[in-house]
Image (tube, rainbow, N blue to C red; front, side, top):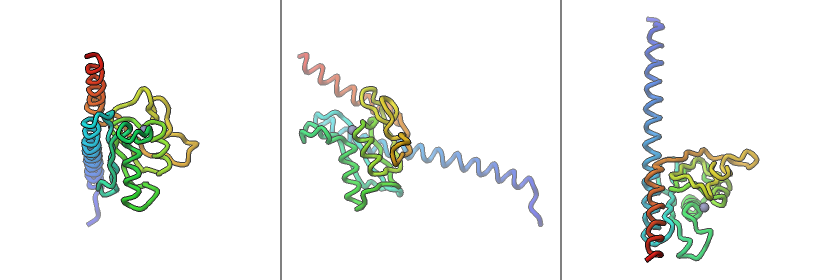
Amino acid sequence: MRRQYNENYDYGKTSGRWLNIIFIKSMMDFTYCMELAFREAIKAFERKEVPVGAVVLDSNGHVIGRGYNQVEALCDATAHAEMIALTSAMATIGSKYLNDCTLAVTLEPCPMCAGAIVNAKVGRVIFGAYDPKMGASGTVMNVTACRQLNHQPEVFGGIMENKCSALIQDFFREIREKSSQ
Ligand SMILES: [Zn+2]
């Protein structure tokens, strides 16, 4: 029997529903990735570092690199969470490029980290809080979307934004309260 036209219509509806499911799934994955990055940020918080955390996941969702801000501990202004997570991920897979990987970080990357993301050809970046002072994924400047550079990752900002920025605000509030005592 030949297929009827209305069957095609049903198929169209089904594929629409599947698209929705895929969309919802990827949103849940973003939250999952950010929860992992948030756990790293907590480690920084506990060590009295500005609480920023990052993880790198491969295309199967396995964590291949993680890092948290260690600027104070290492006395190194370049020891941002993303730099540590990226270096760790490249060492794990033995590749200088991370095309199929996702970097999740709790704060918008600064110009240095955005530059490292471009150099490592990271496939996708998701970040939590926007950074009005140093943000280089659209807030102060946009290194990750710069067409003159040789790579542009996909970027999604504002994932778990409130939770990520509240942690940083809590950290600076504690510092202010201690210094005023
Ligand atoms: Zn940075």
